[in-house]
Structures are given as structure tokens and as C-alpha cells.
Length: 299
Image 1: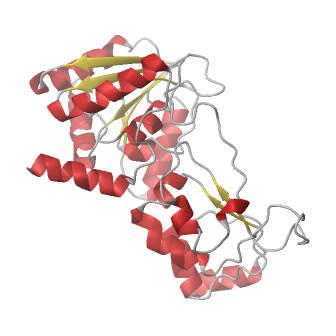
Image 2: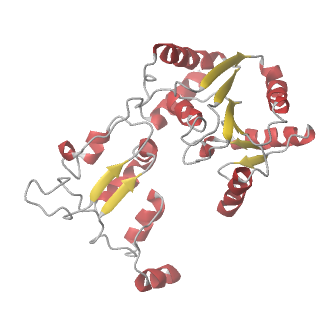
Image 3: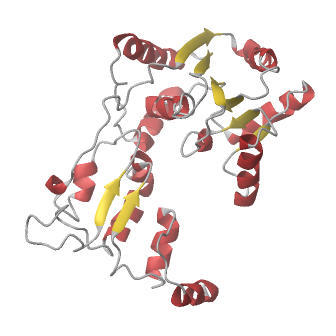
């Protein structure tokens, strides 16, 4: 803490990139002063405004003088207070309820894409219904078929870190070059893994949903959902790893469907893709949705 305080006291900081928990601890220890804060950006807002971070953000907002108007039309100087910016591919329910405690939400200026909550129409979607016993063999077959495409990348998504590790062992045994990424790894290791994948040292990245947000690489040609996601918002973020601006290929998504409870989500996705409509229920609270699904499985 003393080293951090010494650094902050001796440096003027233009941009601070952090997580809610770390920021809140710094504020509690009086390591930061937000008097001159001009912009507060919440990236991946659907996650940050979910129950998981709700209490931390409420505490952070008590230290922020949020600007009530986006311009000087009300007689305020354009730089009075802090401009709050929310960014995300999905937008959660309950934003007004949370932010209404610290600001007038009617002052928000909404900039929204016409394709918000829609599956990218240029990305091909494939759903493979297989028995659970054939799941691994199906994945290995898909990966070996693309071995010759060394310039393209593949991301394989799993729902658990233990599955990522197990898949890694199986790919090693079948001589499929890959790297693994999951949240229990040290930060420095994760940075090195992403660097190797971006620089084409490995053509396959096996990861949890930690790789579905903020990972910007134009070399990914295919996303394979080894485990089908538990909610539609996760599906949308995974699909967003392909067909990005600057990509040389349109991209495709292959979904390995093995469980009965996956079928409901598959049907919703298929209907939305055919009708070119947004995926339903994207703005639901993720933490509550996962708990509900877990309760159903337990029953």
C-alpha cells in the first residue's frame, strides 16, 4: 500500500484502468481523489451492473460527482462533474434503478446499434446434436480438419476451468497444438497465452467465458462451443469473437449440443436468426438467471 501511495502521490494519471473491487479498496484507503475526475467508463456494463458487482459500484458512485447534464444547456459548464459512460454488447435490466440513486437517468444520451442483442447475420451458425460420449471425439475431429489453416484461429469455449484443463490434456494426447486460458491462472500467464495466440504460435485457444469479452483478434475464424452456454448473453458474447471488423473471413460458430436443457436455448437462437430479431431475455440479471438454472438442474 505504501508503494502504491508513493507512486500515486508522485505521478499525474490521465487514464486509470481497473476493476470495481480494486477501485473500491483504493478509495476506502484514500489512495485516490475523484475531485478532478472527468469521465467514468463502465465497459462490459451488463456484467458490472449485475448483482455480482452491484454493491461495489454503489460504493464507488458515492465518491463520484456524476454530471447531471451531458452539455451546457442547463447553464452548467461542460466539465462540471463526471461524465458517466456505459458500454456493452448487451444491456442489463435494472440500470435505471441502480443509477437513479446517484443521478437523473433522463440525462443519458443513448447510442444504440440497430443490431443490439442480435446474432451477427454474416456469421454462420451450426448446431450439432451428439451423444455425450461422442462429444470429445467430435471436437477433435473438427480441430484436425482445420489443421492446414495455420493462419486462422479457433476458440473452443468450455463452461468450467476443470473442463478447459481436461480438454487440454486430451488435445495434447491427440497432437493438437493449442493454448489454454481460464480464470484461475496468474495474470502474467494469461497475458503470455493471449500473446502466443495472437502471434499465431498456437492456432487453438481453449478457454472459459473469460475469453468471450474484451478479446479482440481478427484472426479467429471459428468459435466452437464445446459446452453450450447457460444463458443467451454468454452465447452472444462468444459469437462476437468472430466476424469482427477487420477480419479477413466471415467467421462461423459450431455448437456441440448434448444436454436436454440446452435445447430451449438452441430453439430461441434459431428463431432469432431466422427472423433477424434480437435474442430474448438478454437484459436479464445474469447471476439470478444462473441460480435459477442451477436450481432447475438440482431438481
